[in-house]
Length: 483
Image (cartoon, rainbow, N blue to C red; front, side, top):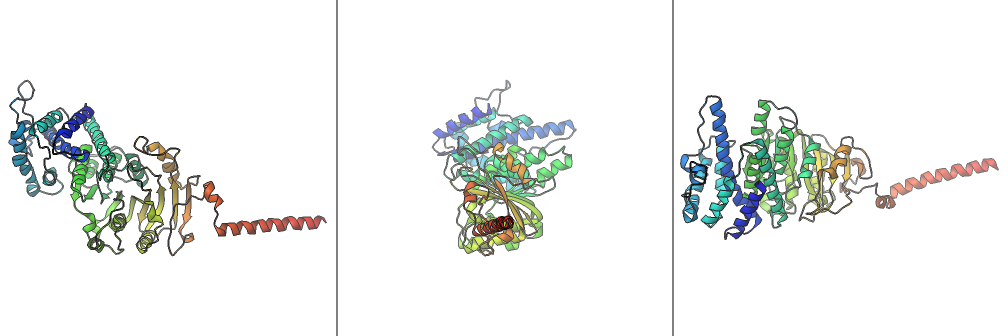
């Protein structure tokens, strides 16, 4: 039912003059969905309070509650035909509803409350659905949805993820919001966060890493009430620069079950990393910072290693904001391993000296739909320098793409071998003392492939020649003994 509802809503928005793309469809569906979700949440809280003999006070004033303006019902449960529509509905939403919800940000007790999130979301959004008649149709469809049971919320969160995925596949700048979920789940398995850890993504996008980490921890063991409170309030943190991504990320976390996500709408790179103090640091970093962005000179001044490359600035931020002993899984372009410019060499040096880069996962092209770049995942722990790095090259017998995406089974061998840093056709270990100490080139060159074996290093060839000389000498000596 949910899937058909989303399709019907997209068809309506496609006809509306104010919505021109899949990005607009997701944004506009999100705010209406959010208000319906809030209505169900308030009903749940009222029921829970009643069962314990308490009284629940609604967050939202009566005239702005869903059942008053969006879906007033007749005694038989059917929609009241006098419900607002057309220009009356559009005017109410634009002139009264949005300004009312914007005020929540200023009046909320703190930033970790759902009231604050309501205010922040409606401060960032505007209603783009120009026709009040189209808006009425959208509201009617969303009113049919229910968020009361765990199963309903679970199904809705998956469908919302599908919408984000479709938005990424639609091109434009949508792809930067979506990291393939099998890859995220694999990164989380390797990093293995625990309840009590603080988990951070400074380029949060659609909050895929935080949502999956929440699911991972929720299913990690039998949770106490304290554990659940810890996960709800003191575990997940994110920052996002773009308004739409911020809205989608916040909404995605709410649908996954985090009631008031600690996501801030800010430009992470505008913060000077010299100002980061111990209280600002996190135990775990999970992130896929934007590829290929170029930052202005004033942003670069916030970092000791000056570069216009967005991902390189994010990596400096992550190293600095990680606690001693903290763990990270970060996706980055594979050129980071071998670029010879001064900034890249300096950044590799910083990573290798301040952190233990214990694992590099080399991903095939096509892992990211619509992005031709090749990527790697860096797994590191802060506090000890790197002595050895284990590499795994993901070689698949098919080309990845929209119709043939990466799946968790593709990554099973990596997860299993990573536990012991085992050597295989696809994996090998590099001693950092053996790499060029000037360039610190970490290129993921698999020595176990036939191509690499055929192109041996001069030192390897000389060593083999010496060995052959020894064997020849032994044979000649044995022959002379016989003579």
